[in-house]
Amino acid sequence: MRENGIKEVVKSKYGEAARRVAAGERVGCGTQAGAVPCCDPISSNLYQAGEIAGIPAQAVAASLGCGNPTALAQLNAGETVLDLGSGGGIDVLLSAKRVGPMGKAYGLDMTDDMLALARENQRKAGVLNAEFLKGEIENIPLPENSVDVVISNCVINLSADKSRVLREAFRVLRPGGRFAVSDVVVRGPVPADIRRNVELWVGCVAGALEETEYRSKLESAGFEQIEVEPTRIYSVEDARQFLTTKGIDVDAIARQVEGKFASAFIRARKPLEALINTDQH
Ligand SMILES: C[S@@+](CC[C@H](N)C(=O)[O-])C[C@H]1O[C@@H](n2cnc3c(N)ncnc32)[C@H](O)[C@@H]1O
Image 1 (tube, rainbow, N blue to C red):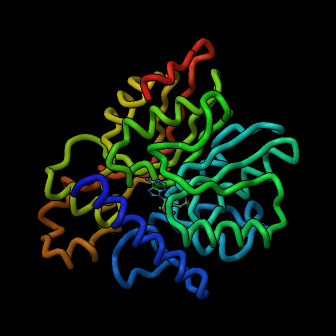
Image 2: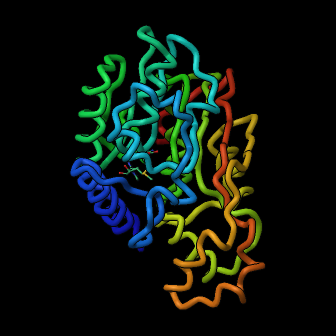
């Protein structure tokens, strides 16, 4: 699928998810029809009860991430945070709390219904130091060297041009700034057809990166101190129902899938001495 085709599929899928949440439903991360959101092994139980106290129920119901980047990232009072693909806004609202009134949290999303939901959640939460921007993570509408921390929760895997997203994250970060992202990664070789089907189960329309590819793309973008730490490793049983509906003999491929797909927390840093040549972008 070409890049624009992928974007249209992603917009339509997440636009529908936003409208369902606005109508009072809960949604889950995977694409499988009829999935039970409470039991979705990817998006469920990512946030502690104490953490989401004061966050509007619809921001929690719209949570479609695969990790909890705000909990794992170091965020300091007064800092500027940018959330790539902010969805219903849960991580932006949590970040805004953490950076306090002298700091700012931006959310960036390309889907109108998600932006409307996030702004409504911000209004309900009474959070003043957050702002939701419309735009694409491949073309971040912020100036270079303007952000202290880039977070993201299960979005970079949806992009058809992941290298560009990482270069854009690098551009907007200040020297010394942190990249602190939850995403799905593949761990080691998996046959292409099986990989594609498991990726569809996870909801990675454009494909997840293999762990070492993630590292090398971050390095090429200019990042240093790169760490990839699995936070949830998926079992073949998690995907059994979905793969069976695709006509796959799950028992036959179990060894090739078991433990190969994970949600991971990915950290990196923009070197203090980094200078951006904006002509390259
Ligand atoms: C899996 S949801 C995650 C939402 C949120 N981070 C969370 O944890 O609930 C993906 C979100 O990213 C947005 N998105 C996907 N690809 C994007 C892109 N290329 N540019 C901007 N937003 C994008 C979608 O509109 C959707 O709201």
